[in-house]
Image (cartoon, rainbow, N blue to C red; front, side, top):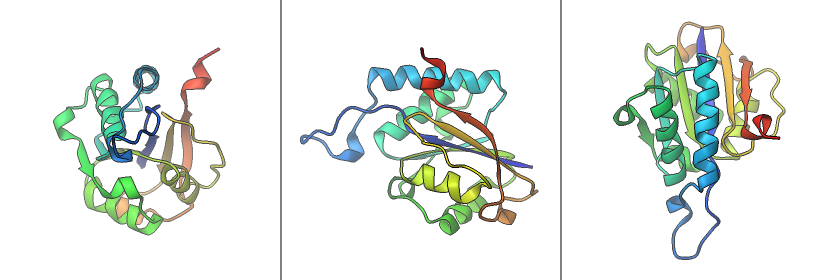
Amino acid sequence: MKRLFLVRHAKTEVIRYDITDFQRNLKERGINDSNLIANKLLLKDAIPNLIISSTANRAIQTARLFADILNYQQESIVQLDELYDGFTTHEFLGMLDQYGNENESVMIFGHNPSIEYLAFNLSVEFYEYVPTCTVIGIEFDVNDWKDIEARSGKVCLYEFPKKYKG
């Protein structure tokens, strides 16, 4: 059984003209939401063996906040530029095969629309909205990452900050 956690980065500062989109940072709300959701994952024992993140500031900041709470070494986070621009489903599966190795669970930190697109294309029935700091857990009944096929996963987790806010 392989488990994939797709995470959309947390809430980010507004678009500014003095920095690039790539350089945008998390807002205080994004930091708080990351802590909230990472703690929910910890309580559900949804802990990855491997974390892979986009290199954009907001994604890697979210990944580091999650890593701290999930007891994952920040220096072990794999950073990939390609997650900023997005993968096709086929390219994404190739990346999982390349980096997943013997890991049973992998957590990916990226951006919309890619996270939503991948959740839809990798699972049997995911049709949800993906606000910032959403985590979608997908289980695959395979022993190797290379054996995953599109539309074959089962959604096992769907967490987002407003679920816990009044």
